[in-house]
Length: 396
Image 1 (tube, rainbow, N blue to C red):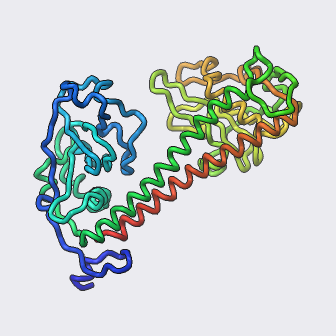
Image 2 (image 1 turned 30 degrees about the horizontal axis):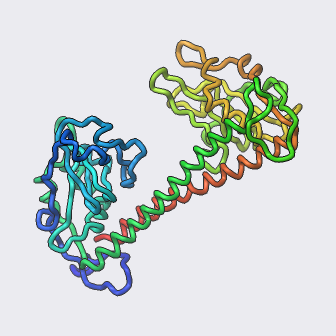
Image 3 (image 1 turned 180 degrees about the vertical axis):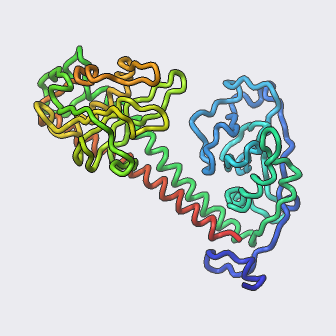
């Protein structure tokens, strides 16, 4: 490979043929020194976006952002404006950066960056996401105490860049992908919130017998039944990692993440292909799940081979999702080493069920909703993988 070829990316937009030129950070990037006093009142209604408000490696702003006034900030903060690039200098291995869309303040643990001398903002933002910059930032930040990249270390970094026109095409294209990722992520969260609310309104409380929302034509009250009366329950070993799937397109919607406050691990529900105690399509609920051993516990329950009153597993599954979301199982947890739910609590759990036709209608409705959520989730992941590949091929 010739020296010229080394300065040309594997993938580029049509019409661009010139080799890229090496640029030194200090020559083309301005690191802002505009620190302001957040107590002045001038910035009260602006968002304060610190590294803790940024999703790693995506630049997506999380939903935990508050205004300067809400944060009651007292120490100096850096001012950013639309199109500024903000980069978290602490723990560079976490990949905290974002492309500003509005005015705001950021932590003193971040740098506000602006291109100069022919370096565009969108391309500068893209450079932060390249593997070469990531490796450099991590390598120079390895020191005793808190890993951090300082101004001198940034100013010493060199990278290759094309003409401004090509920079704009590359940076704008990658930001468009980011916008699509954000769109699918937002839609996924909106649908999850919608489902959460619908579960509360389409499944009645035990004392009500009639849901607040239901499909037209259904008027009969729901019946109160014990779980053991409507589902075949088998105590046995859970499947190992080869017999169940973690993909969001199946039934894995009740997550088993530990609550750090009291060590509680929520029951987890998934479908299985084939195990000693379950067959394809059965629901399995983990009732003893220490952190680190999820899905490989010694005490699980197989539910839902459709006996006496339950029409298909989808309605039963959504019932269990609602129970878990309401913290139903937690009150039965007991144990000194780690908490578990005994068989009596599972067998005697009370659920509400309507007639078969309404069960099928509700189950199909939530199944469609789950599939739509899974579609947006999958699109997010596909776009992230696409962008990852493009960053490797569109940069020198």
